[in-house]
Length: 183
Image (tube, rainbow, N blue to C red; front, side, top):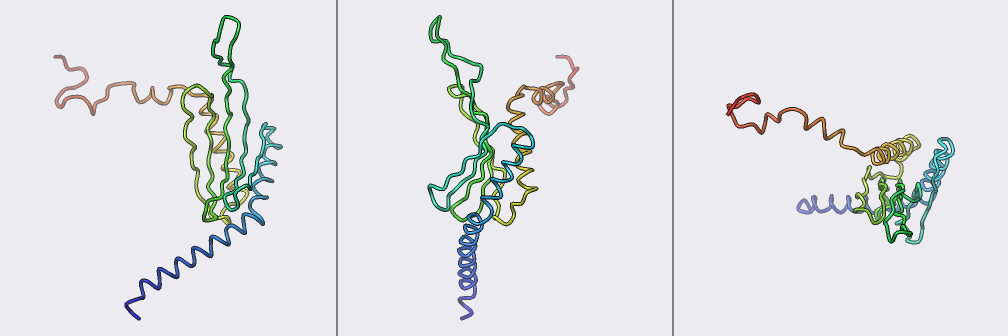
């Protein structure tokens, strides 16, 4: 029997993980989904942020809750003819709580993007949580991260990159040469 101790331990771990999956799925269904929706609705109300909350249960145990800031004309338009412009639509970003196959919850930020204008930036995964780990302070922090990220997207410029480019890049200078050395 000693020959099987490692295997027995691994099988016990496997069974524990399977039991956790069932418990996580149940918690999502009975508590967590409603908590997330309620907290997001409250934050929209308190902050007067315009957004909608969408839930999906079309695939059991792969459900999600999405807070979307919607879409609008971007202010950019393609000139079709002298009299016709085609407005490019901007998706304003989203905060996503998605149930994974194992019952854990993945939280992601969907960045804003302008349709027909480059490729959308990939979603940022904030973290993957066990359902009991997600409490109101976490949801508030996720919303704060979301607002910070979309604000940075909206306020994009090269300020962060300029600071790194100012001055001499000494590490790329040939050895023995100073920035002021001649010839």
